[in-house]
Picture 1 (cartoon, rainbow, N blue to C red):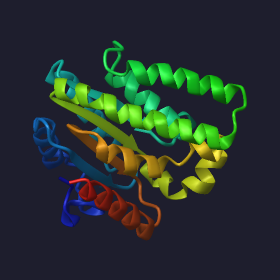
Picture 2: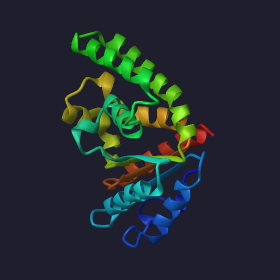
Picture 3: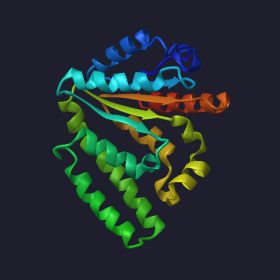
Picture 4: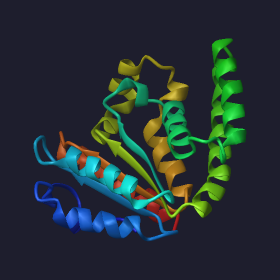
Amino acid sequence: TIKSQADFGEKIPLVGRTEELADLSEKLNSRGETAVVYYRAGGGMGKTRLLAELVEMVGQAGPGYRTTGIIDLYHTDNHSTSDVERILVDTLDPDNKYFKEYRLERALYLEMRERGAGVETLEQYRKKLSQILVAEWLRLANDMHKLVLIFDTVELLQYESSVVEEMAGLHTVDTQLKTWLLTILPQLSNILVVFAGRPKKLEHQDHLENEIRAAFHAKK
């Protein structure tokens, strides 16, 4: 499920957080279901504290619950699809039990990139890596009660093609993060995905909200 329009954006009273925490707790304990939440709030409204409390909630829930922690898109280390995939794999499978093929193929991909492989070759390999991630995710999802993915500062996704690429200093083959998020995440099962951002232009955030809604609804 995805939050209704009435529950999105600036209408959410994040300072109090009681209702939001109860909603997140309910989604956290709905095994097998996919849930998506998008919080928008200005600075000082408690958005980051809410995300931190969710991380703590997952930690206290038991071994069947795992989270990526807060992936803050403000940091350049989190701007590429390759980086985000690595974070998902490393945080959700710290014992290397579920993503063995992905890790092997990723090592080959990094070697190819270091050797200066062509753009088209790298792009094809990146697509292969994403397909492996989705395939190996199923066994992890079946063994866990809930997997929680958290992304902060998502307003940067609206400027990915210019600002983020320049900040990250990466080749465009590895910087189409919004497309990756809206294409790959809806294919993953048993997840709670939380997006959070600080609105700049409301029309940009409305557009991003609609894109998230459409992507996850299309996979139902």
